[in-house]
Length: 229
Length: 336
Image 1 (tube, rainbow over the protein chains, first blue to last red):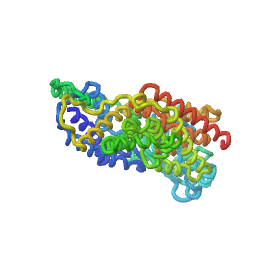
Image 2 (image 1 turned 30 degrees about the vertical axis):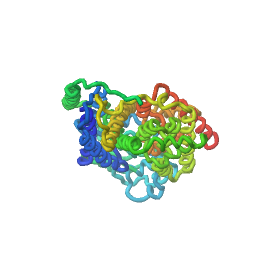
Image 3 (image 1 turned 90 degrees about the vertical axis):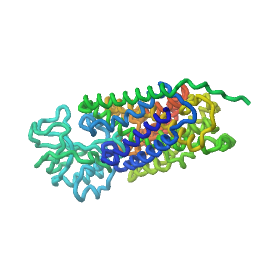
Image 4 (image 1 turned 180 degrees about the vertical axis):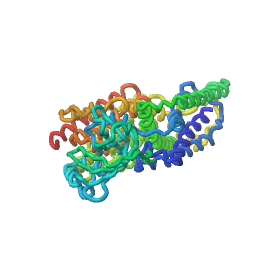
């Protein structure tokens, strides 16, 4: 029985990894850079579970102490929780806990920022160096289009919001945020955590980037809610 | 030669089946309750579950890899081989153990079961602890990710070489303080899988391998779950801005970044990207984050408490903090 219980716990984790792989839900927890752990976890957990099932018949009777039984439940529970609960992503609540002194920890060359289609990753990269800031500033007045969710802080005027995306390098625990201040927003139309596409002219002012909205449209949350450098 | 006699059978299958059924029932009740309540509608609960799930999904395969290596050491590596490493000249033993991390691309969660197994199989506990602390920093994947995170910055080589050098120094210092402690003085006794209730023929090798693999995984994973839960709670409720207020305060900024590394509990293969994002902190404070974090954090603390005897975690925290502080202070004075 103890061997069977261990096999069941390993199978629960294997099941979780296979489900994440099949449904693409791993993008809610991991960046594409670390998504390889999901198939590895699926194979390893399944192989370990099968090996334990194959050796489950003990040559002599064994007992499962109560403490061990509850420890097995504690190990299996997170896998069951992730499988059972509806998919969740980091939201404006998480953004409010992130430090204002943190910038996304990657850089792009000023040349990359100064040319091509402007993305939120360019905005994030520009904030890490004075050269990046200058490169972004050179694009003031250009039209840009960004997808993100709505975030509001205490004191945010009714006709503004912060268009926000999380940048995840490995897993959601290391998420940092990139934000642009959207102005000229119809008051009362958009609530926190609504996903929108905002098109308008950008005006970088130091580390703050203002997007003067000419069009705001609600969109479905993307399959990959986090950006990856 | 004394023969160890195991206790006689005590009608266990029925009890075990009962407990197994109870455990499954508890899981089913928890799932049903959660589906009905759907607590994730509350923002802080959703945040907590996402961070908790993310930490575990990333760490569990590494713990299983560590358990795999640990089981292989137990079943296939003769004790004499690891004991023979103890015959190296003392000044070489600890640095050699630390540099062995170069050959083990495991993160911090995987190195704990491997070190525990090596200590029980005859390697000196000091060398095993040195390996455990150095491997998550000195392994090639981690050094490469540090290089990528700081590529294009003036402090690139300061960060890559500083991380490797200071990580090596801290690991050797902790190993030196552990000194000549015997495995029984350092390690907590661990139930080695299911307990036999009667004598019988020895199990085949592959069956023992499967047993150690499953046993080590389940043993380590319970502490990982606990540590990930604590880290998720702290990330959910403690705003990071409290750390930013001390960015310009000498010494305190280093301690703050070490504390933040302990709270965030990041994988050492990704933490360089996060360290590089702390733009208001200088390279010394970022280095403190990169060296201290892979040795001391919430999930590791739980793993240490489960693996080692009382006092070991305190020893690691104090020595690692002291050596990291001295090393990064030196850097702060000369580099900024």
